[in-house]
Image (tube, rainbow, N blue to C red):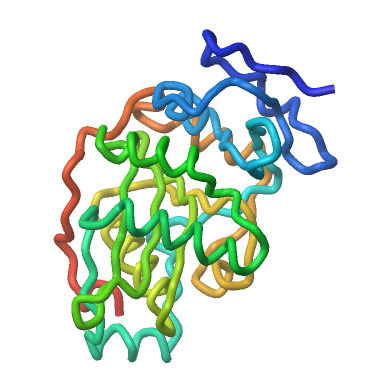
Length: 237
């Protein structure tokens, strides 16, 4: 039996109480208010549910993460980045990015990025908590990703690509910029071969909690609300 969250209380159970099966299920209920979402991510918790389900909150173990300075760029991807066939931006089209992430998953396996989720994360974007990376080609949005910044951790949520390597380029630029800003971690949530090929690895819950505990401002958004790139392709490969 998992706890049911009250609408008027943004606290979460200890993540060590999350179920092993299904892996990481911690709680249900509550809402997707900005304050609750910030509280959740600060504690290593994120929402993930289908439209027909109640809001479900998760904290799986092991956790897939990437240390920004350990980004791995393959030869073929490095060649693509050096060609500069894409233009990469921060926070220029957050709403488009999250919509495209939703549409991509809807066609593949059914989306968990519901209209309610999109509205909630767009509100976080307007508060400078959620951020997007956009990849453009000939003024067309062809890839991107989004997530939350709390303290010196970036909590990645989803990415999409309509051109080969576009989402990988977005991730490389993000990691390189976060390295320049001395971020400690990119939380990738769950393992994928795609992320592993770029340097992500799994850590146990205890190690992940240590990152959360050493996060300098775990309960507040980062001070840097308007993001722009100070790095270039030469800083990546």
